[in-house]
Length: 321
Image (cartoon, rainbow, N blue to C red; front, side, top):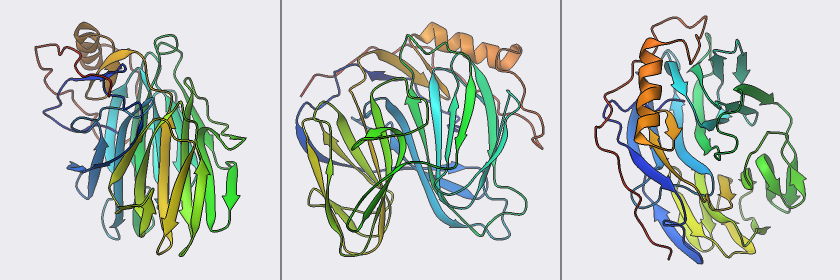
């Protein structure tokens, strides 16, 4: 999924400056962003004061939307570099095309993982015909310097490992959790898991105290460490936890996101993650005037033009708390 903001701002992310080194309960309020004609997303990361969670650098939650008779998701071809995209659905389907020639329909609780590496472009759209409801999340994972220029590739995994407890099923999207390992390629110590809770369930999920964590609420009524988290909001939890208490009043869906704090400072703008203003500027020019990002074939429509790049590079800020 693309950041379609035509006034995209440069953000300095990563480093230890924004990491909370102890357990906290910080409720993040989403920013509402239009994505095409019939899709509105709730953007949780980057957020004012909270840029990343581990290597997770971008989180959009959308739906559930009734798209019967509507075009649904329509994201034209656009570029990425320096990151991985994670597509995750609870309802509906998304058709992925990319400049490598990949063509794949992603369905609920299947992992669509695209590693942009040095450069890739892709599009995402609701198939024709498509299901009535569309509900999911789109996330980006920042690539560390040692791997951010890898050859681009796309992975699709229809079967993923699960961790279960009474009233809880955790589907592992990326990384490791309680002895289970996702087949998706990860380049940093990380975890992403889909948590399905039954009404009345109470559970404690094991965590790594060296990771920082957040929980995104997808649906239902649930409490995370005693805090009610409504659908479309996210609770940042900091570091230092060995377990996470969960409770559900109704059937509920959550996403656990975590990882080792991302040490490197980086610059994120539009659909690029780099290490300097100059690198971002070069990528923008390449998207407009060269073949670096390749061509997405089969999409009916024009590719997405790049917005104007702010002229001033930002400087890192923040302190460890």
